Length: 140
Image (cartoon, rainbow, N blue to C red):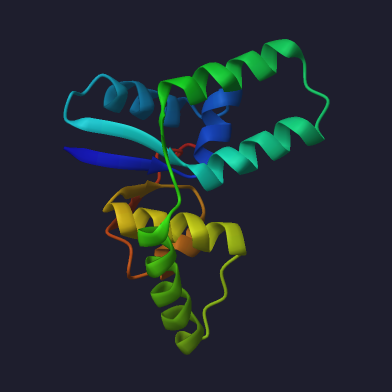
């Protein structure tokens, strides 16, 4: 089974329906019994922050809630903390700077052996990741 860990930007594209390519891949993987679609509890925190910060319509909030309900939320615990410590040390040694939340999500992808689904190019610089893929290929 292949586990796909969706980054916050991918979840946002899906909820807003702003990337037909990402939605098509999401639908394809969601219907594949050999795929597991997940988000990090860190991503869920970012989503909840975004919903609280913006004055969104109940329809938009319901759309996000429905999407999140379809995904498995992976907890962030000791294994992820260990991966984070190693990852941050390696990136600092290489002079690579990654936003704090992105580094936490990357550590979760490493710890869980997940394919990270993201449109964020910084993840391409993290060689510790099992794999990354961009489903939002129709966005620049």
